Length: 103
Image (cartoon, rainbow, N blue to C red; front, side, top):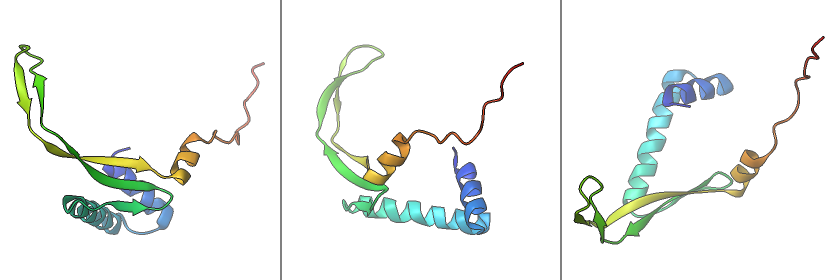
């Protein structure tokens, strides 16, 4: 699902205009990004937690020529799914449609 499809799905489920959903989604991304930039975490109970981790500088290899290179330290973003989300993802789909029998 891409951004446009997400906006369409939320708009059809909530009855809110696509324009308002787009603005809300942009705001959500900005707030989460700004919070993570401050090294704080964003926790949505039941859905999951966005947080940052520090990656130390290390030595690596250039895959094109095999020469050693230095990889700089960086901050990485992690997402840990919440219990409710994990349960929903692992639930078996309901069998509401009956299979038609071939004659």
